[in-house]
Length: 429
Image 1 (tube, rainbow, N blue to C red):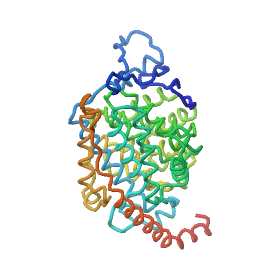
Image 2 (image 1 turned 60 degrees about the vertical axis):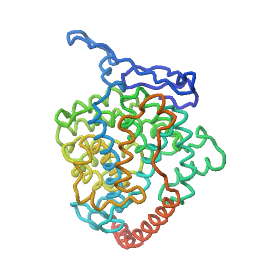
Image 3 (image 1 turned 135 degrees about the vertical axis):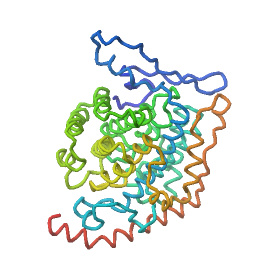
Image 4 (image 1 turned 120 degrees about the vertical axis):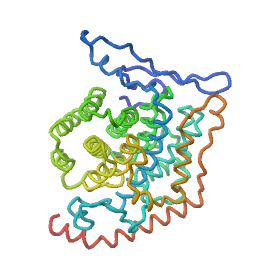
């Protein structure tokens, strides 16, 4: 995937054809006209087909039923937010230290014991979705809106957002455009935006890969990070399109391998495929990949292990999230991506009540998330709606109070855990 800026950049669409994507076409009233990706005709099984032809079932123009779409979007919101909250209290710990402090399971909220407090991954997901609602179904409108929300978000002092996001937001505040604000970084925070884009853009005729890649480049310019975000977007597409009773993890892994252009990621996916075939558990596969102590907070390892945790535990949201978080490392993002994929696939009803009941994303409460999911069920509704698709209330003052609360809780949590971390470092843990 090319990383040079400009309207003539090359993207591979999910049908497997590499094409130079033209700028979005606009009608006379200024609204954009979606150009759906053509779907190839079925190929008789007796005919030898090329690699591209085998990949033509990856069509973003396919549309699921409205009930399935509603369940997937609601599952994304609750699945990612609760996975983020469950992993936030274990963030930065090695697997061994995490197990010593919290045990193997069942896992529970740990920043504030018994209270689900989500971190930056949830905030970035919601900013992405709000920007899509206000985009008038235009890519440039989305990019400008997302950049504006990053500018405002830094005013809430989200120190837990990570250096790369803070630097990119500061550049935007200092006058840089969304095409110049990115930082070369392997950080994994853009993955949640890609997952959200893939879920809500499915069936609209837009290229979710292109939206995900350009959204990533607003803050992160590393080629590996962009490719990893696109991989998560493709996985999110499969989660939407595959019914639970038709799920075949080996087949889904094969499809991801076929469409992946990056050779390094493709080879790693092949190793994971062997693990799926042999029934290797998530931790054993992490050891094989060289991440046995903890998962690095980089886009590639996070995406690969979150996807593997989902594919090998696809029948259970609880198992998917627990297996991902118990790996250690950046457990908030691991939990958010794995939980988002499981939530898209199984729906919000698959999340245990003990986690939903004690989730506290204030001011983005459970009712707020439910209302957000309903805004997207039939989006975009038509030409007249492209100019009036309402975003949910942002409540900036409450967001500032929330950031202060999260900052304080994370500092307190780090201080409490400091003796454990020092002890295990001294002992070589």
